[in-house]
Image: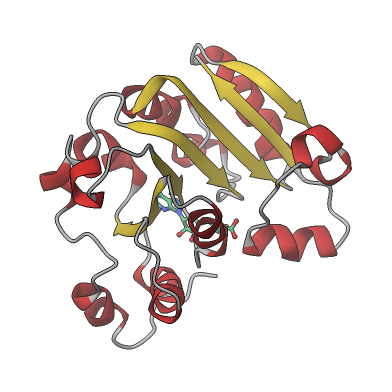
Length: 212
Ligand code: SAM
């Protein structure tokens, strides 16, 4: 997935109208940027962007923002938008650590984490996107009634995430350890690139929806 060195990816991103280049300037003004008062939903670590593109197409009255750290992966999402432009889908290339400088308090309606990098070494636990440290950042930008959804096939990462949510003062609304065989939670499920790959290999997919 980390196609970090695709020649010219930074240049393409730099010129793309689908990418917000100075996101901090839009803090508190994201709805204005979209030109409506629709809710803002973000995916962090969106990779090639299939999940968010599908959601944006299905839900024109929701604004979506994809956040991705690596240019070379973001490039794929931009290519998808070039092929089929959606007015309610934008991208930011940044590290999710910067979230509170880019979104105002409560500005985000929902957060999606899909197949986040596991960072298996203990000393890297803080880098995991469902860690307490990241939950504290999400706590700032997510509206009080907002929800965070996380999917992964990595059972160790998921168990870690479930432990962390309680420590950070969040509560689970729904949890499944086999999403694709859970009729309630799977209703309307949009598969990500990683989800397609790992479920095809027979891996069960874990998912939680959490709130404070
Ligand atoms: N969500 C996609 C999917 O399910 O197919 C991609 C999953 S991929 C394993 C994880 C993605 O998260 C990578 O593209 C990686 O660059 C991105 N990522 C990891 N840590 C990040 C961070 N701190 N901020 C932004 N993106 C991050």
